[in-house]
Image (cartoon, rainbow, N blue to C red; front, side, top):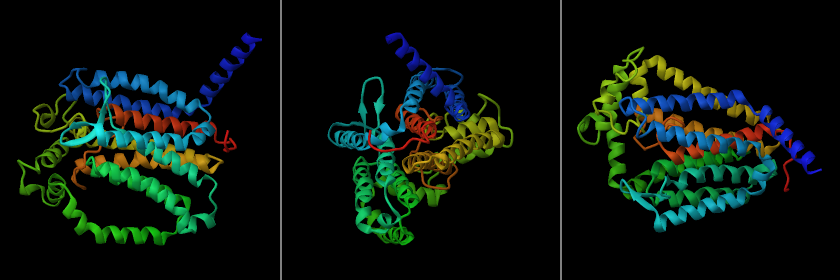
Length: 376
């Protein structure tokens, strides 16, 4: 009897594993391998200190992603509020006892890694909003009173992240939340009014910004005004991108990267390193891979036969895509430098953890797209 139950359970797991979208998983692994290659190059042709750690993290988190994918999406629906609560508590903990680094208090030092709760909170926020909007009707969405809860769900973590301070993450969290509200069907005039309010608040916001944040904006507007100071990062990034040409300088042969002209080449500016060595062709190829991941995520969202899966897959895909856009636009000088990592490619544990959790949830939405999502 017990052996029969165990055998049936194993067969069920194998069946679910076979039904996972392995093409989507292959894209994820391919981009991660590009990240390992770039980190190997960033260290001058060495696996230490970045590539080896990143590979080890990915190996562990990859199996975690598969476990998340195999769990029925209805369980994620059930525990959405709890996960949001845990994420919020971690953000509060950061404010009280968080690890301080580079002038900001954003991390919890776990010893083997520094956990950045704001990254995980973005996933929990999307999960909770997907649950909230799951059973909402078109009449509900049009009522301002119904949108008070989503506004609070978005505003509370954004406010805590602003205090760290981390303006970039706060803005991206706001955009992810707003995108969820928009897809749920909220009236367009709400977003127009919100945009007008933000535009009107810019002079006030400028007054409360930190000096380095103001300097980033001024540098974005005129990076040549201080090429050896505040404009150094973006100036060197543009030089490296341009020097790569069509085919690049070759693997391990990027002069800007390996002569240490390019700052933060293992994190924020890793796309610049990749484009310098592999040229426009390599940069476009990486962008196409990111585009395929985003397309797959949206396709999975459209396939889901329950609102929870649609909203969850869309929100997580949007969250991923905005990081890709912000990082690449930043290193090209199209937007101010905000310190956003390139998902799966930049060195960092929490950013990879958050991205892989998101992918696991998207895969779960696809695997259980026909489930009747109600409370278990």
